[in-house]
Image (tube, rainbow, N blue to C red; front, side, top):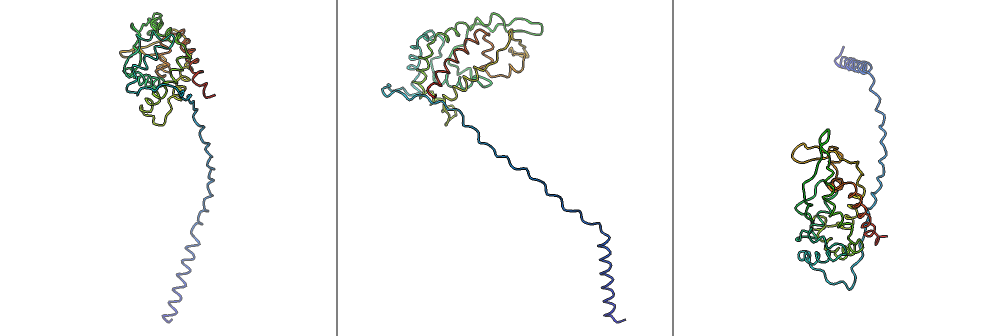
Length: 259
């Protein structure tokens, strides 16, 4: 057999072998079914935050001192509000506008910056009574706050809000210097008022524990609440309801220009 014929036979055998090998292979798996792609939900834009503008200053309003020089003038104006004269012994005289702004901003947070509070603390130690599983807020504790709550109640609400609007440019300046360059202080004030007004009414006496040095609320939900709400629980139910009533009256007058 010639070399050419042998080459043809060999090529045919190779082709047959390849064909047999291919025939013996398992069929390839079918292509995976297309995975359905969930339609991307259309995200609705968040509603704009409520805006509570303040009335513009009167055209004939006298010029206002600079924020750094405002302590004396603002203190005098505040004490001139009907019912506010007794605040004279409570106010911390320096950085008064800034202290008010910082404290208001901190009330819905975990802690209030005590070094920057605008009022002196009430006198006397925090009173506790023994209980079966620890302590409760003492019955003698609420009277410590009586004079402070009375001052708040007798201050003329309309005049107080008018003072706030008159001095609003300085409150707004202090708020932006606090780290909110685009923020509006009045919006924050309404937000804080709403937070405090919604403070849950907790049955008394309120149980306490003392895991370290200071007393804490035994209920973790109370202990982990905001500084403002913890204070409202500490002053006693009657005082708390009186303060909330005053806050409601202030809010009603603050939001009135917006609607």
